[in-house]
Length: 350
Image (tube, rainbow, N blue to C red; front, side, top):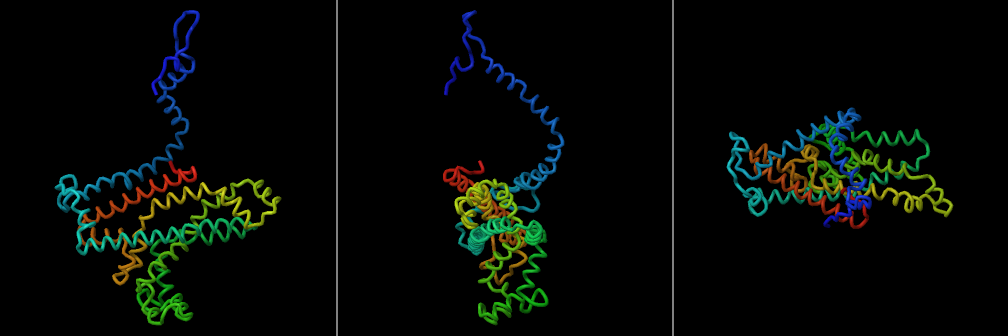
C-alpha cells in the first residue's frame, strides 16, 4: 500500500508547514541506531550468546558444510578428483533410481517402501505412547513412586544403539548372538503364536517379524524419554481447571478428555509436525545392526541402501542421490503437515 504524507508528517498551524511526527522521529531513531542496540544487547547477555557458540559450530560442521557434498548427486563419481572438479552428469542418478528398471532401481523402491512403512507404523503406534505415559504419570500422587517409574522408562534412551540391539537379539535368541532360541521366541512358540521352526531359526531371520520387533523395541527405547515434553505441558495446567471439572461431576477419564488433552493439544500438534518431518529419516544404525540378507525384503531402508552402495559398492553418486530424494520428501512432508495444522487448529511451527 502506498504511504501517504499524513502517515509520517503532521501539519504545524504556527508555521503553516508539515513537520515530522514524534512517532516517526522515534522510529527513525530506532532504525538509525539499530545495530547499536543489538551490540548493547549482546554485550549485556554475552554469557547466553557464548553458550550458543558450540551449537552453532555443530550445525556448521555437521549440517551446513556437508551440503556441499550434495553436488555429488549431479556429478560423475570420481575418487581421485574433488566434487568441484568432477564432470556434471545432470539427473542421470535420479533417473536410474526412479525409472532405471534394473536391480538397483528395484532395491531403491523396496528401500523407500520399507522406510515409509517403518516410519508410518512408528507414527501410528509409537507417537501416542509418550502421551499415554504422561497421562499415567500425572495420575500418580506419590512423587517418589512417580520419579522411580519415570527413571525406569527413561533409562533405555540412554543406552547405546549397540547395547539396545544386542539386548533385542538376545531376547529373540539364546546363548550366543548368532544361534539358538531366545526367551521371547520360546514364549511365543509355547502359546502357539509362532511355529517351533520359526522360533528355532530366530525371529530376526524371518522378514515377517522384523517390523514388529523394530517398532516394539523403538517404543521401549523412546516412549519414556519422549513423554517428558507432554508431562511438562500437563503439569503446567492450572489446578482451577481440574476443580471446575470436578464441580461439574467429571471423573478421571472425563478430566483427561475435556481438561488435559485440550490443554496440551498445541504441544501434541507441534510434536506431530516434527515427527512427520522425520518420517523418512530412519536411523540406519539400528536397522544395520538388526537386519541381514535374509530380511532385506522388509528391513532394507534408504539409509542402509545408500550405505551399502555408497561405501561397499563405491557408487557414491547413487547413494547421494537416494539420500537427497529422501530428504526432499521429508521437507515436503514438513511443509504439508505445517500448512494443514495451521489451517485446521491455528497451531503451527511457523
